[in-house]
Image 1 (cartoon, helix red, strand yellow):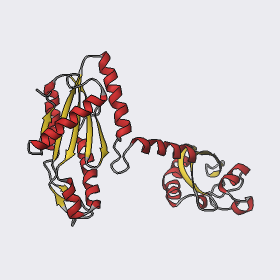
Image 2: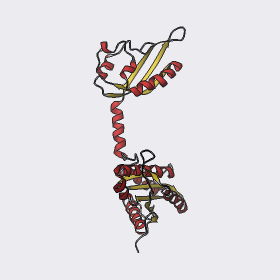
Image 3: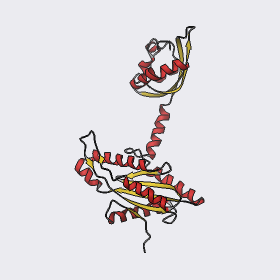
Image 4: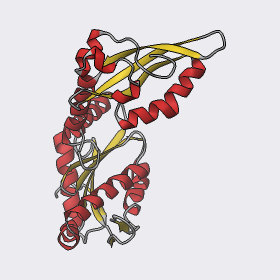
Length: 279
C-alpha cells in the first residue's frame, strides 16, 4: 500500500478470499474494500497511530467480498518512511478470522440468553455443578436464589411483548448491578431468573445480599422507547436454598429454591422465602 493508502501489490490469496481480479484492485484505496465502520476506524484511529508508531498489530477490521459478504480479519502492518520521515508505503498482512468468530458467537449463544445476555440453563447447570464439587472439598456456604417476577403477564397484556422484553432486560441489569463478581445470575426462560450466590462465610452475609436483591425492585422501571414509554412498578418473589443444608446436588438445590419461591408467592408475593423442610 502506497503512502496515500492505495494498493500497489496484492497476492493471489487476498484476491481469492475477496473474489477480485488483480486489475480490479490495483490503484484503489484500501478503504474501498472495508465496511464503512472499519474504513472510518482506519482513517480516524489506526492509521494516525500507525504512522506515529511505524506499525500496527492485530487490528480488527471487516472487509467486503466482491459479492458483498463480510469477512472478519486481523490486520498487521509495518510502514516505510523516506529520508524526510514521510510515509512511502506499508506492508500489510491479513488473517481471515471469519469462521473463528462465527464459532465463538455460536458457542456464546449456546450458553447465553439471547434477550438479556445472561447465562442460560446450560451454563447455569455447569456452574452449579462446579460450585457443588468445590464445596464438597472445602468448607463454606453458597445459596441458590430462584426469582420470579410478580404479575409479569399483566405487563405483556397491557403494554405488549416488546414492553415485556424491555422489562426482562431491565431486571437483568438490576440484578447484575447488585450482585458481586463471584455471583451468577441466569435466565431460565420467561420471567424466571436463578442466582448462584457463592463465597458466603455466614448466613448474615446472605441476608444482606438478599435484602439488596429485593431492594433493587423498589424503583419503578421505565420501559421506553423514549420518554413516553410506559413506567411500571416491578416486584418479584424470591426463594432461597442453601448448600449443604437444603441440598448437596444441583437438582435438589434448584428444586428447593423453586419450592421456596412458590412459598413466597403464597405468602403475598414481593418477598423472599428461605426453604424449610416439610414437617
